[in-house]
Length: 184
Image (cartoon, rainbow, N blue to C red; front, side, top):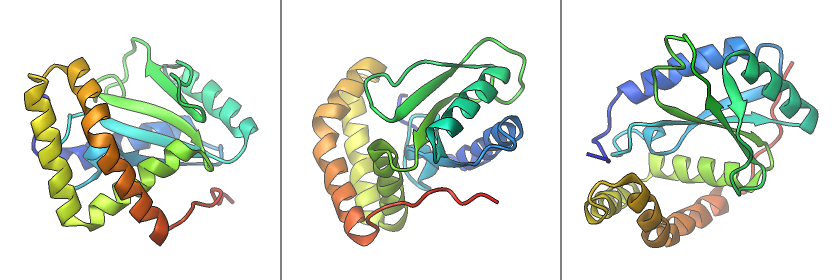
């Protein structure tokens, strides 16, 4: 199955990855957020932890990139989404980072894509009806895609984007923006 019922292990797995990232990125002004469907309790999801590292300044990004390379990641560009940089794992021996499937992104605090992730996540966490509707939509798309990941991604883009954008617009009316990360 491509989409699985919610698993409380998602939060545990995020916390494990977060600890490794926090250790590896020590001393850099940033925040680490669990985003995507696995960050929303009771929502069915692909079992992949999505993580956004949030930073304030371009100089912070360069420090993040260097630190991530030290712990086994490589920069894979923005993959067509300005302001959201993708990091992938190289083969390694880390018992957490190499064994929990995750996607890792670095986004400046004012990045539109970051705001979409946070608005959508927060809205679905707090609105059960919207969460259930989105879950049903995901199951239907997965069935239509015959659980093929690439077909699912294409269909989700076509069939779920208007709902996602609607939810983001609702969320923005309640919480219009996000501020810089506060670091001491």
